[in-house]
Length: 104
Image 1 (cartoon, rainbow, N blue to C red):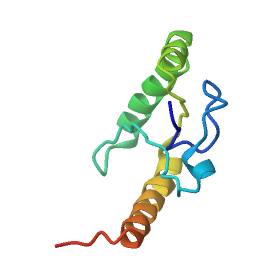
Image 2: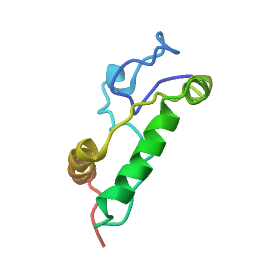
Image 3: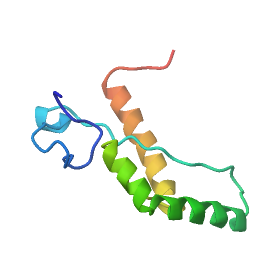
Image 4: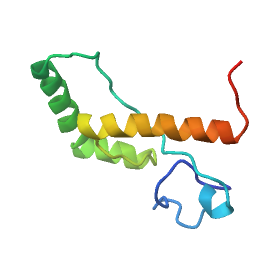
């Protein structure tokens, strides 16, 4: 492995592998897998889905699977994602502009 990227902190599984930012490159935001529901989803349905996924993600089997796959896991609810997603769009827009990528 030459470098680790898309991580906010050094990967504990690879503590001696440099991160992209250690090599002088601007790092990209972490990759995320997100469950998104349609806008206007009724709160009782949102709560049921949210609670089921949160409970599943807290199970020892799930945590072990994530560790086995070297996938860092962080649970975020609706409020956090409502801030994170627009911030990532803003970051990528600025990054692509800096790299000279334009719309055609």
